[in-house]
Structure formats: C-alpha cells, structure tokens
Image 1: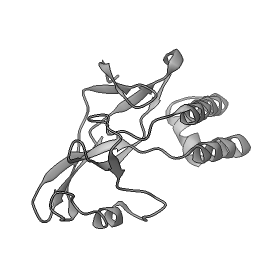
Image 2: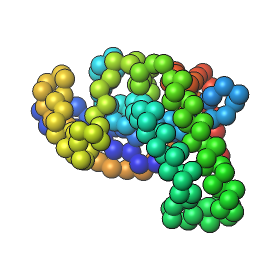
Image 3: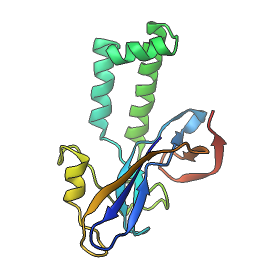
Amino acid sequence: MLMQSFACDRCSATFWCGGICGAYILEGGSDMPVFSAESWCHDCNALVEAEAFPGVDAFERALARLLANGLDDDDRETAKLLETAEDTFLAQQISDWRTRLDWRKNRVSAPRCLTCGSTHIHVLFDESRFTSFADALAGFSHPNCGGTFRRAEIGHGHPSGVTQFDSEGLQLDRESPVA
C-alpha cells in the first residue's frame, strides 16, 4: 500500500497518509472498499485519510457503461489474472457496482475522517477543481501557520488488518486480518 508523508514548508509539521486499508460492512454482511483521499481534519488538526466518494451520478454512469459495453481491456486482464471466466467476472462487477450504487443512494452523512469519524474535513483533491494532487496541495494553506504542504517521502507499507466501517463511515470495533 502506498504511503506518503507531507511536510509544511513553514512550521515543518509532517503527516503520513495512505496507511488505511478499509472496508464498509453493509447490511446483510456484504462489504466493499472504502473510498479515501488525503484531507485536512479540523478535529484531528492533521492531514489524514478521509472518505472521498463521488456522487450518485458517477456510480450510475459507471454501472451504465459496464452494462452497455461490458468489460474493458483492464477488466479482461484482471479476470485473466484471477483465472476467472469473463462472463463470471462481468456478472460480479455488475453486482459490485449495483451494491456501490445502492450504498451511495442510501448514504446520509457527509464524508468522514477515517481516524476520528468527524465530518469536519476538507478533502484536498477534488478532480472537478484540480488536475493533479500537487496542484491541490499548492492551493491549500496549513491552517496552523499558513504554510504550504509538500510531498516529503513516498513509501510502501502493509497494514496488519482491514479497518471496518459501517455504511455511514463510522469505525466498527473489530478488525479482521488481511488475507
């Protein structure tokens, strides 16, 4: 899993992001990956990973594209790597996107900090406003000192488990080992 540290050019505060491997546990016991991005949490007073998920329309477009066009080249390659028949993989992808769409339609709360659960966050990278994460960082001033964050280090790590969240993004009390 990719992890990155960001340092403020004025006060030298440094924050690591990217270390959360999360899953939403949905009603009925199914699960799906957590959508996240680097964000400023006003309650943690830190750069953190927070939920960042698109609107219902993005999920609807993805499902419609899959239903109309079937698997794309990347999906076919993934099916091949998983040694899964393409029709079986397509059926699973359709089912997964329907689950994601249902989840998004029913989601009530705003995105949350994955550390403390607060909705008092500022997601840094918004594709509708920025073309790169570097541009997003350059446009964000450190709330404590007014400095600018710069990517300091990039590393790889392996989480010890999957952090589980309910459908509203609140962390559940249990962790399950990574398979």
